[in-house]
Structures are given as C-alpha cells and as structure tokens.
Amino acid sequence: MSFQNPWGLSALLLLIPLILLYILKKQYEDRVISSTLLWQQVSRELQAAKPWQRLRTRLLLILQISALILFALSLARPAYSAEGESIYYVAVLDTSARMQASDVKPSRMEAAVNALMDFIDGLKARDTMTIVLAGHRPFVLAGPSGVKSELKRHVRQVEPVSGSSDLYSAVQLARTLLQDQGEGAGQIHVFSDHSLSDSVQGNTVFHTFTGNGQNAAVAHLSYELRDGSLTVLSRIANYGDDRDLTLEMKVDGVLQNVKQISLPAGEEANVYWTDLVPDSTAEIEVSILEEDDLMLDNTGIIVINQEYHGKVLLTTERNLFLERAVSLRKDMELFKANPGEILESSDFHLYIYDGYMPENLPENGHIIAFAPPSHEEIGLVVEEEILPEGIKISFQSQYSDLLQYIEPEGYRIAKAGKMNLPEGFTALITDNEGNPLLAAGEREGRKTALFSFSLHDSNLPLKPDFPILIQNLLSWMLPPEMTFPGPVYAGETVPLTPFPDVSHITVTSPAGKKYRFDAYPVPVFYDTRDIGVYEIVQHAENRTYEGRFAVSVPTDEVSDLRSDSPDSDTAAREEAAAAALPFQKDIWMIAGWILLLLLLLEWQVYHHGI
Image (cartoon, rainbow, N blue to C red; front, side, top):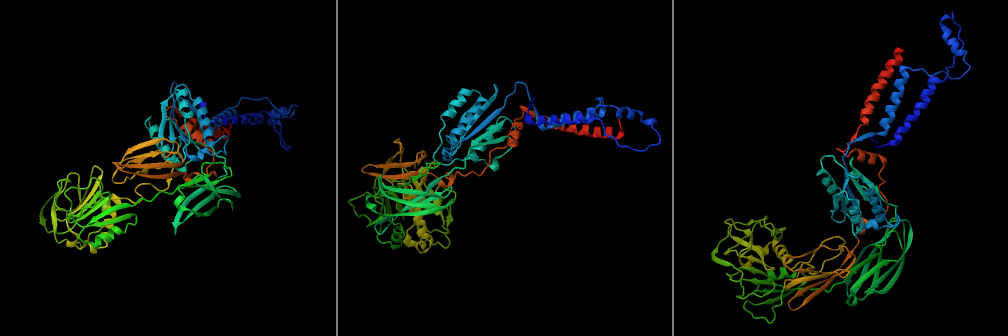
C-alpha cells in the first residue's frame, strides 16, 4: 500500500489535543445544593493537587481516536498496488520551436529532456514506457520498453524543430496507445511549455517549462515591384516589455541599411525598405540585432525569382472568344497559328487546337482540343455526328475541380462528335444519353482536355461560365507560380509543380542536402525542417528552370513566449496516479465510509452516555 498524499497523515497530530482534553482536570463552579451525599466522588477530584487526571479507557475516547485515524488516512489517499504488476506510461515530448527559448536555463527543451530522463530513472522494474514526439506531425519515437538505457538513448537524440508542434494530436495519439493496453490503464505525462485544457483527463499530467520569456520577431517579410522599383515590407512584433530594436537589411548577403525603432509591449510595427534595384536582387534578409530569449525568429528571408511565362500555342482559323479567355492569364505568352501551319519552334507548354489536330503531336506540352477528329496517337475515336440534348455534370470524378463554379444552365450545342474516349480519360460533361461533351485525362505526364463540339456550334462562349471553365483548365495544366512556391513555414509540405517538358526536379536544402524527384506524378517535398533558402532546379531535355523558396519560422504560433498556463498542480498529479488502473486501486473511499459510520456511532454513545 502507498499514499498518494503522505502529508495527509499529519492530521494524526490532532490526537494530542484530543487526549489532553481527557486528562486535563475539569474546572468547576460554586453552587448551592441540598445535599453532598451524591457528590463525594466529585469532592475527591476537587481535592487532587495535580491539574490533570488519570486517563481512563472509555468507549467514547476509543471511537474518537479511531475517527481521527480514519480521517488522516482519507487525507493521505491510500492506494493498493497489486503485487508484481506494472504501470504503462506514455511520455509526450514537445519539440516545437518555442522549446528553444532560453528563458528556462539552459533552454526549455533541455529542461524538459532532463525532467523526462529523471522520470525514466524513476521507473520501477516492471514499468514500461512509450515516447511520443509532438512535432509538426506526431510520431512514436520509442517503446513500449522497460529498458531505461534504451529509452534515455532515444531521448538524448531529440532536437527541437523550427516550426510549430501539434501537441493536441500527440496527446490523442498517446491516449490511443494507452487504450491499447486496456481501458483506464496507465498514465500520460506531457513535457511541454504549455498545457491543453481540452486534453486534461484524470490520467494526463502536464509538466510545463516556461519562464515568461522576452522576445521580438520578424513576423512578416514581403516585397512589391512597381514601376521598376522594389519595396520591401517587414513587420516587427514585440512579445515582451517595451524595448528599442536595431534592424539591419542585407541584399544578397551584403549590408544595405540599418534602422532603429521603439516598440511598446505587445505591439507591432511596419518597417519599409526602399531604393532597391530589382534586377540585381535575389535574396533579402532583415534581422533584429538585439539578443532575446528566442533567436530563431530574429531573421526573416525572402527570395525574388525570375519570372517564367507559360508559352501557349492557339491553332485556329478565328476564335476571338477563346483567344480572350486564354489572354486573361497574364503569366502566359500566347502565340497563334493557322491549322496546318508549320512552325519553326515547338517549345510550347500548352497546345490549343480548335477543330484541328496534327497527325503527329508535339513531344511535349499539354493539349486542349475542340471538335477533334479521331486520333490514333492518343487513342481517340470519333464516330458519327450527334445532336446533344440536355447537359449533365459529373462531380464524382478525379477531375471534378475543373468544373468548379460551373452551372451549365441554358447551354445549347447544335452538333457534336460521338467520342469513344481513350483509356484513362473521364467524361466530365455529357448529354442526357451519356455521350461525352468534355473529357479529361493524363498519360505519361501529358494532360489533355477534349471538347466534342466546336465553340462556333454552341452558346457556351456567351455564358459567364465560359472564361471560368477555360481558367480552370489552364490552372490544371499550367498552375500559377507553377515552378516555385511562395512563403513556406518550417514543417509545411511543398508541392513541386513541374513544367510540361520537365523530366525530374532536384531540391537542395540550406544545409546542402540534395533531393531528387521524378516530375510525374507531381512530387511533394516534405523535409522543410531547416530555416533558410532552398534551391529548386527543374530539368528538361534542352534547358533547366531554376528558382528558390525561403522557409521561415511561423511566428504567429511560436514567437509569443509569455506563459498562459500554470504548472501542473498536485491534484492533477494525484488524479493521474490514481488513474493507473488496473495496476493501482484507490482505497481512500473505503476509509471515508468507515469514518462516517464511526461518527454516527460516536454520536449515539455521547448522547446515551455509554
């Protein structure tokens, strides 16, 4: 048996005044009475010279002593541990960037790691533990294991990340692991710099490490190109007391300017940097020079990439509506040609054919075709002419996003070709008979959209849906900023959308680590743990596309070090200890019920003079 609150036994000290009440001589008052015959015993007590009397064994005294003992036991919360049983622990260790703060020496992370190591040292022989790391995505680091040296070896290798952590999901994962051991079994101990009120349960204890740190951060960095001039906006946030800050800006690693600002507590300020030459600028860095409790967010970086324009070839006799719809994209260069015209260049990212398709398609580039003929290369067979009646849209296909904001009410199509779709293509719009009117598909990285009708035989160009539909198709084939992503926070994933003629993509991290991806299917880059600039190179047969993106700290989530949650209190720890079922049985309630019965019995004895 063990006591969850040993200090409760201090209530046994109340036995001392109780016994003193029984041995101290009673004080008497003078009264006039008719006879002293019945008061001889009292007279002998009055004649005693000592201030106390001999302690006599009385039932009332025994009951009161027993009641005090049971009261002390109830406060001490006795619990019974089954012989030979063990407790299963799940430790959740927060690794967010906030844990790098130095307001707890040497850092919040090291303090949490040391506390977890001490906890592991305190495990009993049969106890086991699983360690869960709370990073951008939670995962199991080690366990279940009862080998202390193995658990501590894994903990020593843990390093904080540069982004935020999903502590809530990590606690939910720990709870799932605990449930696998049996309902209510074991305990969860969370080592972090804050607690989660929504996740607190009887078997969850938060060990918090926070010193209410002082911190300032470069919360945002962006730029604007206008009239050949480059302007940079930096937003500086102060998550502490009033302070003066010195800011410096570097362009491509060379110091360009220095400014000083004063920021009140909890305020932000926008600082503009002008007179920059855009043609010679590739990387801009703004830093806070003063040291604080979290240095990771004292620097912000942005990169300026060369603009790449998608090249689009429109082959048509004359289609003003289609030309205008494509021209809405300002990041595209539109070239026009007549059907059958032989071009010197075939270096286009997208080919749009209106009522025509060449027998030999270009080797690279996506395709949009209106009223195409049968084509052996893509496996398209067009049979007789049909007269479509009604319009139906399929929102269940993998290309349903192409029909976003499209409501084909009042569409009229005079005639269309009956298309037998190539393998792998999906009909997005059909008539009432199920004949495809618009189909989409992919083959070996080439994206293709087929309209079975000509725009000249339809009222579609007169509908407000038409430019939306064309833009949906263009965004699918040539997404805006299709080569290089915008601002990225540490831990986020980055889709690497390739140009049509790209075979593979390489990414180089700030630490110099290289990653290689095939261009199709579209790869996703996950390892954005390092803060800094990542290099991207897209490799085509005859050329390369080079660019960069910057990974920064999510300041909105990690930079405010001010404490908003107290340390775990004793009651929470007691509840967690009591919840380690079925290994530990809390028996204080039994002592409480016996105490209640004793008090009732003592009341009966006192009033009946037993």
